[in-house]
Image 1 (spheres, each protein chain N blue to C red):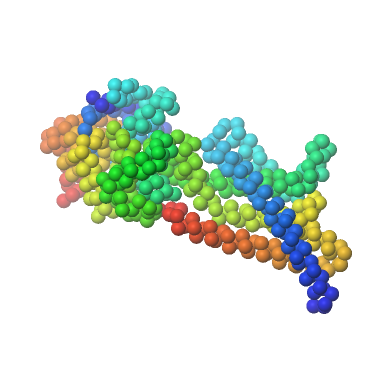
Image 2 (image 1 turned 180 degrees about the horizontal axis):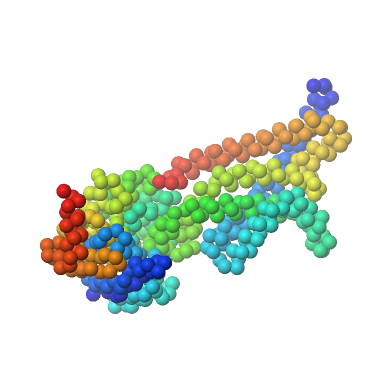
Length: 224
Length: 248
């Protein structure tokens, strides 16, 4: 490796890492939180079989899962302004990532809710809890435990997908790599470097996931 | 009379599971509900607690009438407050410790103070011999221990009657005894109980009444001793004979 490339990589590393920490990570956390809220609501509506809303949820999932994330980003950021809906790039990205991953996570949560035995609900009723109380204290906590590995998966894919926000002008880590590359023309080196930083973030998330799962297992495990 | 069950009917997919069951329960009664499997015993119990909606029938609980088909949410809550249910497969809350399993209905359902709920729970768990496992999770307990915790959970809500749905049927043979002895103790303490069971010794020696069901109908209902020593109906005699034969 020649000295020029080496210097470029050394120079750009803290810069890229900085964008990763200041933009990519918050973008992921915000989008994931939004996705989680959507997923839980959509899953609960389907679990409780609320009539009209249930159809609406299926429709939402159908649309989101059936269209590419990139296209969704373009529609919201470049398309909606012609209807007078103008969003800044960052909130637009949060919205699209949140609603996109939310559709997949809703299915994860629905499956997890349905895997909680019917008897848990009945036992809750019999000790005097109402529907909301049983859901909040018994069924949802168990569903979260079951869904945890799959939800972690979603978070890891989301972290990587935030690189697509570069296409709608969000100045995040990957966009920054493109900008630097525009100046120095070291595509291979720079894009590999940014890949390594994504890998680093994902590795951290994997560790976090493992630690949380250990904790969950200590608190009684999922199944008897 | 504490509980008057009148003419409970239930169909599943056009199959009559309960063909009009009636039963009178006095305070302190221990009623064993016997019968071959598929006779509707469990369904009857579940209908009484609205876990299953009966097609028709009433219960009169402490002089208050409830319609088993058309009861309102508030009525259902009132009935459930007076009753407790012990399931065949325990149904302990898997994400809660032993103590939390017993207190949840009190603190969340009945909005009791934590400290008070804890005292009631420990007392109930002491009665079933599980007070030394307060912080264990259900997955760390044997079936017999789980069922005893489930009984403590039922007791803690201070019910007027406890429904037991085959409480020992899911247990390994060597664990049945510990659950039955807890139930025997409850009976001696005067708890009113409705017990769907296949344990003939319990039915004979602990319960004071037997309801014998077959094909969704009440075939015979009377004092336990009479049922076992002088069964009136042919089907009762066949049933008792087959049970005795199976044991030899």
